[in-house]
Length: 340
Image 1 (tube, rainbow, N blue to C red):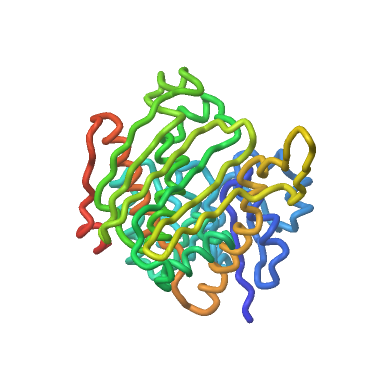
Image 2: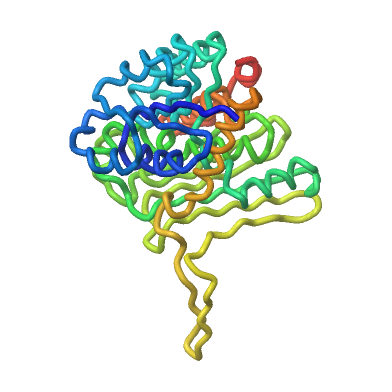
């Protein structure tokens, strides 16, 4: 089996998470890390076995030994980096979203389609063992026709307002994971959205044309409907639940618990909270998604979450923002989306 040479762009929280796993992978060599603050990370870079550091990601692009780039940099850099990687014939793993602009995202999509490279989007929830098992059950038709899907996703606390200013908004930054999950589970395209919400946790967020609490209803081509609920504050931990109702019954996925201990006492029954945030909740899923990406490159097979998937999730996020602003449903041009 060949060894793939990686360059990672962005050494923030998610970049370090990917590197911590890639450095243990038998088929991976991490040759480069690019980050504007890399001079402050010398000890960590050395410990991680990364051979070279740079503040200019083009050093990675111009290295003919690099087979793969992992994009963990700010969203507004993604499209340019994707285009550069395609031009150099390098495979790409890109964290969501592709861009904050649909037009730019389409440019990236076209570059990948024309560049004969593989790009996998970082929608890690697809690779969670529980959600994968549910998708298999639904895909096999064991529940029959599906009437409703309900997704609950709540963060333990809102991010700083400075982050909100550049995040792209709740639909693009947070609920985009749930849009991808809805398409993944239902294996059907979304035809209409209706969104409502407000800055109910931190009113200051409204000053930046954003919200922290939202409900979205979705209609699918297959006739099913879905409800997604997001909130940026859940004082008891990271809340991640799914329920599907079909002809033959219902399936629900509850929160993971930090332990399975339930304490039964005369004054009530208690159990532990869910994991605090996404790094703890989806730690295994991050490994599985990267394994799948590496396997797709080594075996020349399709990636399990494509740039087309990323584009469609981003398109839904844009339509939800339009729906919120207009207080009316918004249609998606599914025929056009399906040809991307």
